[in-house]
Image (cartoon, rainbow, N blue to C red; front, side):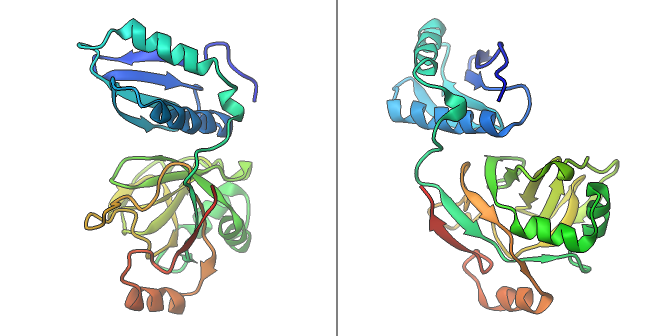
Length: 248
């Protein structure tokens, strides 16, 4: 990655905290840096930091800047940033690799062919691309536990739709701008609905209500309609037939 002279950049977010940004746009090294830096901040155990989170390319620290000297926190963050090359840092430990069975196309995921055309491939190639891809949870957002995952190959840098699809169901796998999302709940979207899973990203009754965490990795192997129906009938765990293993 060619580093931009303006990054990493530390900024205040009102009086609620500080934002450490590693890029102006999504890239794998900038996302890696944000995830690794958040883990390093958490490991410091600074009393002033009430909470941390990440976006695609930034780490947010919730700090009461009305009570904590802002410059002191900036100095601490600057010193931590200087300790290593965050763009080439190891990803945090405790990550999982998920395999989520996915039905592509059919009336349950009706925009596969449209998405394939936008990517410049036929439907069968699109299924091969998406089912063999291994993507990272870049961030969680929009709805509880909902993952933004990427990055897909360059030809999947397809734009969002001009209009909205009125609703895609829970578990829908959608695609745009080299990223995939599994929808937490039925929702309108400008992303194209290419696959359908039975995976629940938000499980409010669980001790860990968010099934996925930033840094987790996923693949979406193709299944047929009968397999999806079987999973929906027999798997009430929320995993939707998915399996996982530790990767770090």
